[in-house]
Each structure stands twice: as structure tokens, then as C-alpha cells.
Image 1: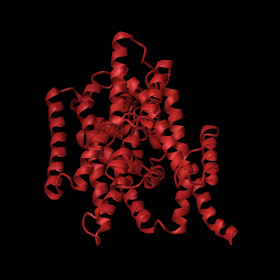
Image 2 (image 1 turned 60 degrees about the vertical axis):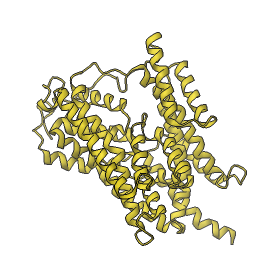
Image 3 (image 1 turned 90 degrees about the vertical axis):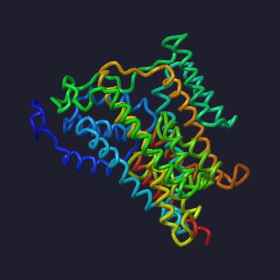
Image 4 (image 1 turned 45 degrees about the vertical axis):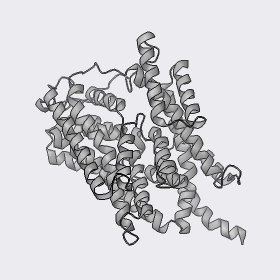
Length: 450
């Protein structure tokens, strides 16, 4: 056991790589669980970074669009081992999930009619609905600190559920409202910073509160412009290749364009962007159905990595369904589409961290949430609640609102909600129990009907 009174030994790039690879395979539990796991491993156990530096980086990642846990891993990897350290940390946080989602997506479309697979998803769907309700509750407790923020959340819910306004317009309107309030009514839309509790000391860290900023992390506008330019070049190069190979209206090109926009609108995490993904992937492009979208979220909840990896499922089903490479190469079409979607979804996250990290490192103790971002966070609560209603309708009335009410799914969803909100059961045990109930029902129901 290392002496807590002395700094830990320096960590090599390859030692860090092994850790990031392991983290990619065990990062279950959504962003909250993943951030807690990184805190335990990096701050408390290994002491690679101090509590205050960890929270400072986390606050920046919470402000950004995109998956905050993956961005936090990228940030710490970059801070420790320069650009390649950040790329490796961020990529390994995503790669295991991409491989698992691709394999499970194939199982879903190729073997989805098997009774055991159908039973799994029957139990998982109401559990996922409960998880979305729980997410709205959790985010709401953190964000909705006064009646004005409650009003923004309510307006966002009505705008999406009743007026059917697109997600980007809701985000823009909330940001404008916050900006105006910040100017004319200071403090109206401000809340306490995320994780602003008193920091706990765990002993000296490799990157401590008073550690000098590494040379590569010092602010240089020339470097900032270079990283930003490289990111734009990678994005443009990918788009040019897709347009040349498939045309602007080709499925892969449209996926790349659509998920680029989605990546820039993911304020509030995966749950917040799912309504936007639903509007584009289900209603506009018809890459998959509403029921399949719910199934994809169930897969995302049961695999490690960012929950936003559900986009890989969307891409796989879109590539498979569109038969991009002909009816004899369906798996290849799905896998390539999942890879394309993942690349264009996560590229902005790497650019945000590698370009913006030096800016953050120059502002220890000064990073603040602005009024526009606070207002957007409030709107996100309403958007997530709308998503919960959408899922509930499709799960409880599978044949449409005029069809039969599924009382069994309602009972599973209610039990899952109580387990989450009252007993604080973990995500994986909950999903495992609900999936087991679904499989059991597929075996028992035919016997009862015989």
C-alpha cells in the first residue's frame, strides 16, 4: 500500500494506457457512475490528480456539449501525457462500447425474433422508461433552483410535446432567455457549480493543486488555432470522402452530417439529445423505428462507455436497413455505418478538450457557469421529461394509444421506478432483474395459455 503522505511514483504513458483500456471495459452506470469511478481510481486510490484539479476539469466538461465522462477522461489523459495521452484516454473510453454495441446490434437484427431475445427486450423497455424518469428527477434536483428555472423547464416540455418544436430551437431559445436574464437580472438564472462541495484531501497527487502547469498545457492561441484547424480538416476530409463515394444524399453522408449537428447539441448528456436523434433518425430519415430506438437505449444502458453510444446502434440499423453494400453484405454495411456515426459524434469532443484545455488550465478557480448555460440546463429537464412520456406511451401502448394497455409492462416499469427512486438500486442490477423477468414471462405465458 503506497504511503499516503508522499506523492505517487510518476506514471508512464503505457501504464496510463493500460488503465484507460481497463476503464473502457468497466465504465458502467452512465455518466454519474463513470465520473464516480474515475474519482475513486484517479483521485482517491492512485492520486494521479488532486480533488480540486479533478473538479475544475469536470466543471469545464459539464459546460460543453457532448459526453462529459468521456471528455473528462480525455482531459486528464491530455494533462498527464500530452495530445496522444488525451486521444488514447478518450478513444479507449469509447472503443469497447463500440465493439459491444456493434455485436449486440447484429444479434438484435439477425436473431431478434428468438423468444429469449424478445423476452430480454420486453423486460428492458419499461426499465429504460423508468431510468429516463429517474434522469429527469436527478437533473431537475440539481438544476431547478427557483421558479424561473422551473418555468423554462415547463416551457421546454410543452414546446417539444405539444408544439413539436425541434430540439435546436428549444436550446437556442433557452440560451437567449438566460443571456437576457444574466444581463438585466443578474443572479436570476445562476445555480451552485456542479460538485462545489468542500474538497477532500487524499494526500499529495501527481498533478496537485499547486503543481505548475505543464508546458504543453499552457495557453497558446497559435496552438489553439492549430488544433481547431486540424479538427475541422478531419471533419471536412471525412465529409468529402463520403460525398465522393456516396453522394450528398447518400445514407452515410447524411448520417455524418446529422450526427455532427447532434454532437454540438448534446447539452445535458445523452438523455437530452435523444429527442433530437429521434426526430432525425426515426421521423425524418427513417433509419429505424420508434420501438427500435427504445431497444437501442436499452442496449446502451447495459454496455460500458458513454450512453450516447446508442448512436452506434442507430447507425448500424440504418446501414443494415438501407443495404448500403447490397443484400449480401448487411453486417459490413451496419458496422461501417456505426463506425462513421461514432467518428462524427465524438470528433468534436476531442477538439473541445485538446483545444480548450489550456484555456481551462489558465483559469483555476475562475471557471463559472453562465446564465445562458444554466437556462439551457433547465430546458434540458423538460426535454428529458418529454422523452420519458414518449417512451412510456410506446411501451405501455405498443399498438398505439387506442390499442391495448400493457399492464405487465406498467408493473415492471413501476417496480423499476420505485427501485431507483426509493431504494437507489444500481443500473446494472436493475436492468438484469427486469431482463430476467422478461425472459421468464416468455416461458411462462405460453404455458398459461395452453
